[in-house]
Structures are given as C-alpha cells and as structure tokens.
Image (cartoon, rainbow, N blue to C red; front, side):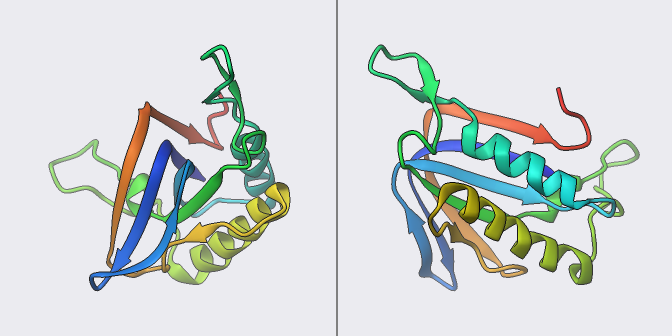
Length: 150
C-alpha cells in the first residue's frame, strides 16, 4: 500500500460540486492499493499514520501525532499512486489492484484507522470523480510505501 499523507488545517472532498466530507486540523491520507497487499500492510500503515509525529508541540517542534492532538483524518482512495512511468509518457496502472480487491481493502483500512484513533474518519467515495480541497499546513507531505519501509 502506498500513502501520501498531508498535514492540513482543513480539507474538503467534493463530488458533483457538493461537499461529501470535510475535516479540520489533521491529516489527508491518499491511499493506493496494489495487487499484493496484506493485512500486515494495513496494520503497519494504520499504526504509522496514528503515531507519526508531524504536529508541532508547544516548543514548535514536530513531536505530536494526530492521535496526540485529537486531529481529524480524511482517507481517500487514489489508485494513481501506483502509476508506473518508466516507459513512455502514458502511466501504466498495472500494479494498482482492481476494484474487487481494492474496495474491500480500502474499507478495511478505514475501519483499522478508525479503530486505532477511537473515532470516525472522513472518507472520499471509492471510485468517484472527487475534488479534494485542502490547506497543506507547513507544507508537510510524506510518502510511505508499506513494501519499502524506510
């Protein structure tokens, strides 16, 4: 699984011009699900997202997690995170899992993050044409791939 995490002051997901979901201070997590994901990937990324210390403490040091600040989280499915661009100029999506695999894993990932945080998270609508509006705080943007745990 690949995630792109953005620390935000606020974010909204619009579908057909209407606000589908919104959050205040917290994280927007774009998640791409590949063809070889496991329960271990979900568990590892859930813990990483809940405990990633990227919010400022009282001294202005990134030392607090979204869990610590009781921040909001929005999780949006984004298969394009598995784009392969090595050959030519048209990305290949061959490593992105098909909907029959990715939708249940996305829903399980959302439930897992909710369980870790002890509250609901905002989501997009799987497969919909979404417009994500956000104010990136910092900016802080972090890329994590569960298959490359650096």
